[in-house]
Length: 302
Image 1 (spheres, rainbow, N blue to C red):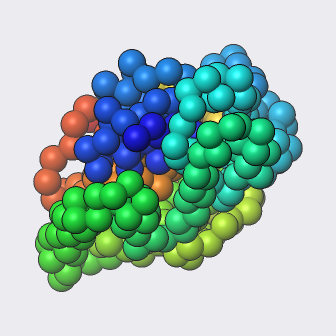
Image 2: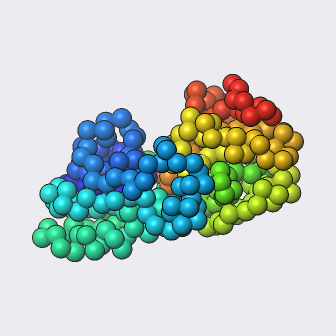
């Protein structure tokens, strides 16, 4: 079996099913687990994100995350050479990955006729449901069922630990400039971890908000988890937030690893819930970089 993943979250799902050896191609952003580094890359970024600010990236793609033109260029010749049996993509966000329409057009001319699977989860249950979908397609339904049970068990364990604790008010943003609330599965992650999500509802495809709306929501905790930014990149540009009026009045601000645990609809969103349980209630432990608390001055702490 030969699988080409055009979505980092899909690569996570394939890996969780124990099928990394079947990956024939991946995106330039697929970085987990480490062994996928040896898999051929069939995409490239259309812009140099390391040299642009959040506002400049937003302007390039036509507004902000989940809008505008894709940041991905697809190497159609390389895709054809890999002769995949399956191509995994999505149609949820044209910025986050190569779109289903574009992939369908690319594979239409291939002799092998690979099966294109589009993954469109918007909630936690739908994220885990992708394991079931892929397990059936790849002929490993029992393995998929076991993995779903594993992740559901971890969610249930967190829920038990936070059941009787006070629920802090939590705002999460997935872009720095403009301010973009984190929707889709993130409000559920917050709720599962024992918080009250603000600014967005479960499954919601959000829109930008003014900073005053963030302050008006009166968050006890602000989570900063920009789409596609590792914590180091977020911290380097955090002054976009810290210089805003009223920032110092927010009781707690945390920078989290968005790409690993919050932006991508893969099984590691469950680990994101566990990270949030630690942030909100001190439950469990986190590794360096999974959660960084930011002081009122904007400086990072432990």
